[in-house]
Length: 612
Image 1 (spheres, rainbow, N blue to C red):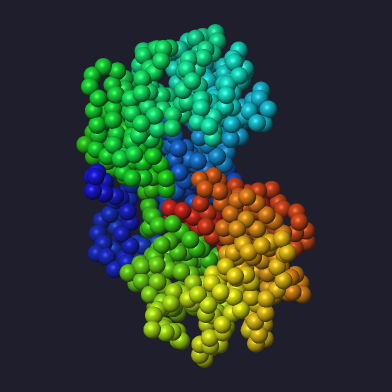
Image 2 (image 1 turned 180 degrees about the vertical axis):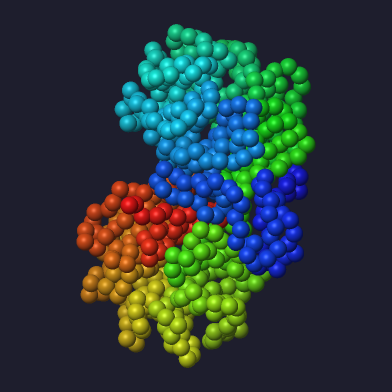
């Protein structure tokens, strides 16, 4: 990174054709000079969410870190949006079991007295286990955005309401009704606590102050972050505007391009702006600036001006020592591109696509199989017929095929003067392979030659082979079915409109499922009709068929946690309780041992084993 000297600590993979020597991985090192070394994974902790999702790449996690807290001189805790909790103590990374699938706030008085919170409310760690703290609020009043305390028995937990923790229970204090959720809380003493509210949508808000007996209305100023060094040095941040307060009077606008505000010990506060520039505001003395933080940094926490942690998306954490930024997490990653595809031929033969990189896994570790330079810079799809028969569609318009020992390329005809982009591949065996190519072409391999079969729709995006000489194609223009030598189009729901289809898959000819926007659809048993089974305001991103019938479907909603539903054929109108996963899941694959694999942003490859 040109703007800051970053020590990137990544694994050198022998398969990439690079000269490999001794490489640093986080704070660990190992020799990576042979094929066997490419499988070596550093001794990093396995991070799992409360829903049972466990990262296998990158390690220890690619969860988006949202907050940090230092319990002691050498005891840093990081929490992730999807419930990840990692700890850096004594120079070693470890993991703490997550109490919830979503977290946003943390505070601690000691390693055995930690409070965290999120949408489900607050939780307390006693050094051995988490306990959910009963809230006096209704379910709508349980979300937690920020926590601050002046003593183990004097802690404020704020969200929809301001609640007080006395070391054993939460209670309501006397307080006015606040317009919107409280987003931030900070204090210089037990009787000088500041809180900020922000009303979503309108941008209005309030600054409040606790004087030891009551919450007092200070100003009509929204705040999402508050930090300071004393009763006459308070800083607030709301919607990019940084204000400085010297007491209960009006605040002074200091900046309008600030992204985050954080504490640096007890003697200074810091900010990061939209140029990644970090400014330090000490209690006394001149403002100073640090070298720009890495692009991945979205939040910071500091103990001193030469001891600052930056963290953010993709499980990233970096440390500033007063001179340089050093990347510490992820401690091990083969690629940081978004993982868009995961599949396999067995639980111990997995393949994943992240950008232009093809990764091969054995169920627990990963290695690079093809680099972007070897496939034209990108990969459109991969299909694994068997461990010794894997087909990859590259950005170079070629098929890269693995025979168990080596890769070879094929250039399937026909094609015109230009090189049309290949989009998707599916098959039932080595003599029955289907490929989408260009905007209206389907190529079929029968074991001897390629045959062009033009579908009855334009702009197809996905294909699934249901059986020998039977395939389904979906795209912007609808659905088309090839069966015994002919294409035909099934009837779509009358109220469905012209919503583009995005995916098709199934467990057999009588169990075919499709996705379109927020819809999950199923083909009727006679294959004449397509009907809506489930709909959502979220986008249906991927589906994985269940061998006994039915599907798993993942829905995305921006930076919110992904949600997965299991839909069965026995009662397709009833959906199981949503399973929460990290944000940005892009693909699913269900192995024969019922382990559900997901590919996500930041190169995330995670698995969820079946419940006992």
